[in-house]
Image 1 (cartoon, one colour):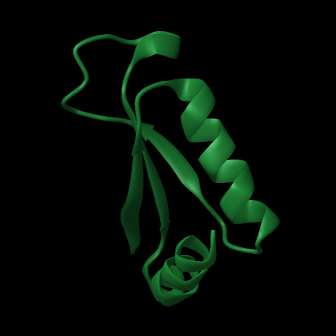
Image 2: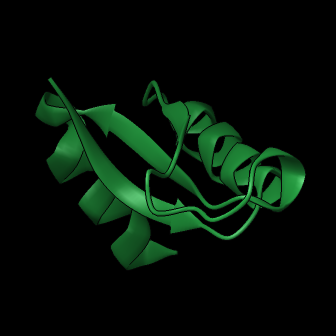
Length: 64
């Protein structure tokens, strides 16, 4: 199961978070937020990681 770890106000920021997590060895996915009022680059996106990696991401974010 995938869990949400970040909400980004644009696709570019969501992709940056995804690349950051993947650079740390944690797979990530980006999905359009259902609350977003727009689509495309300016839409709100959510970043998800596998549930079993939640503790790893918490440690990464604590150190960042």
